[in-house]
Length: 426
Ligand SMILES: *Cc1c(COP(=O)(O)O)cnc(C)c1O
Image (tube, rainbow, N blue to C red; front, side, top):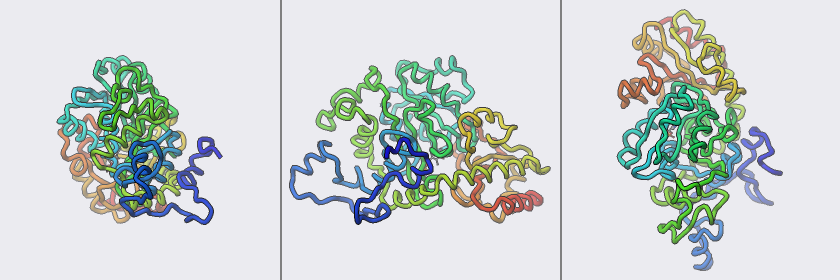
């Protein structure tokens, strides 16, 4: 049965691993760094990428391979490469298309770790970034693109500002300039949004979040849609012989998925940041219920957002599922089945009152995490985003009083009661 025709719920449960007669029912953990072969030629052919198989777990591992196939199927892409973290996924995704002297246009509503990666570390590597607001017009976006621009980067649903990306607008301008649109789809997951259907070319994930869903494993993923024209003159590394891989030409030898093969052959090989088999196993276990969890996360978040919005002690709530949200229209288009489990709000009395609220919550814990089954809160300005300057905080949509709330899958009445009692003490 063609996996492309199946619904995401079925793919979440079944895609990635199909045991043959007598094999284990669920994908086993292959906790082995290496693989044994009977003759030298077999290994040589594997190194030449002439045959498919495993030779060293830094490059590929059977357990991780199952997770990669599951995520590729869910996103509707041709291939997926899993990484050690979401940070590694975004680093590799950029490095695969840009080198020193190149330029990337990025939407300014970004996860704090991504801002830091772009403005500090990748800048040190010689890659320059220009930031545009999510509300940018097509003309303004066009004006940000330079002759040496290699990609447009954005988050579909931004962590933590929950800004919804107008994927079609960004894709249109990127494609008019022969550039791929790379989107970080961590918060919606392919259950709530499949960016390839709206024009994205590469999707990245922090699988650490909803895909794992239980706060057990750090991991990332990079998915390729397939069909992007890497031979348009802007990406010579894709269509000229790779001297570091005895003359491999990615677009010629692997026309189906040149981006993913180049990713594995160069960046996973040389930076050594693959996902580990045990993490992949736990993440796959989580993903088997991803569709059920995303539905409940979204329902609970909408109900709690409405409760907070009507609460006299709450100053403001931003959740794209609320009609009051500036992104409600975009959410109806791109997130019709739910807006995921994360929202932001501020308490009357500002930052100090917000801290009192957080200290008094009993069910919702203060943790540096989002997107698992347990409800949790965090104060980005003093925690995840504390390395950002005030200007960067504003650009990332993080006000000093902003509390990021990740709504779990507990009973909604219990959650509302917990916030109510804590708000009374704020
Ligand atoms: C958490 C997160 C990352 C980084 O992922 P890690 O797995 O923590 O390295 C990147 N992008 C987004 C949107 C995230 O939420």
